[in-house]
View (cartoon, rainbow, N blue to C red):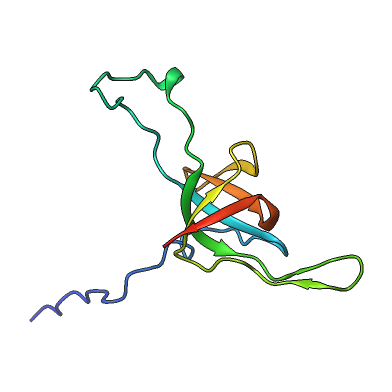
Length: 112
């Protein structure tokens, strides 16, 4: 009699699939998708879509240590929805996904 196939019960987390881990003072954010239509229903071409300044934190680096020895604690945790500076951070592509690598200083708010 053939053995039944084993079914995985624990789903991998978003960061377990990624081969990147932010360093001290940085966090990795999965940006929200850009609006494809306006409020009145007009469909926007990709060139006219505004890049979002909001996303979900998927990985957080260690607390930042300043030159004077003062420690800046990570202001966010994995899963937080955050707003970040529009031109802050760096866009990177990891495993086919476009992500943002953002400094703690470029974070502006946590959505509650």
